[in-house]
Image (cartoon, rainbow, N blue to C red; front, side, top):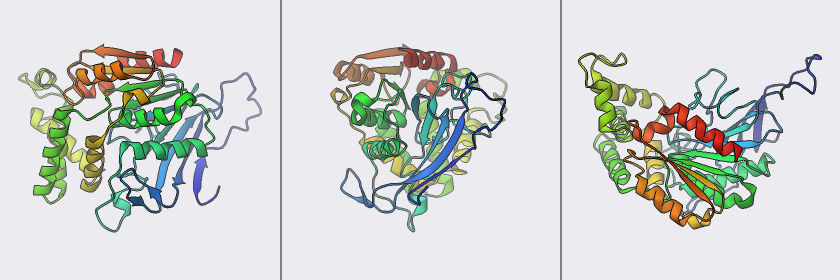
Length: 344
């Protein structure tokens, strides 16, 4: 491969016992795509020497499923070491079955992983990156990989925002779009929460302690009061957190700091705040997964999306004490939604 498109792959089986009747060989590809130089952002700013890190897992000729998660997700919804961010749904024999589909994931531009972000710069800043910018970069990747048709885009939370733009760009190249807890614009409650999180970072001078506290607040916003009460309101400590709910939120904050940094958190949070799509521009059959108790993406916004959608649009509503995190925690019902979308 050229320097502009690095790719590594596991070798195909050379076992003479393999025949055409056996299951297709699951291939693990990963690499980095050099984006056009310069990569002009929606804001008009320029991102120089930008690279988009990606993975693709599944049989080489299988239908493609693009899998996009929240701001803390990365290019590996599943990984060889079992540390993918969505192992419960992705892999051999699971809802997103890598024996039958090729799963494509990316690291976010502006994030903390291998794609271009604040950590790759000499200073802490990076030009503001929109959800539309992420989608344009992802479209370039699909084209470079030679993917003409996409069977399904699965977009959850921030990934759902990016998925809307990508679906509009792909048009008839996309068969179906699934949005989990994602709407066409930022909710007011979510805007307020992220404002307070950035204020915590400002007061703490972007220290690890400030980032941990900001993330702890975000985690509370993703859940529900009833769910937290049910989990921690008893007399005994829950789930090994000796300090109950305080130990739980502290654990999530400290865990986040080990991987993320404040500049990336600011960048992607601001990208969430600025997200806008006209649902009429998404002319692809769509399924919306909605959680009635989700404070950060309220049900009213998803009904508004469905009413304005540019193609057939179905809403699957559930109730869950997990709130926004239901797309990760309600594994059985989410798996059923996946299977339905893959089959229609």
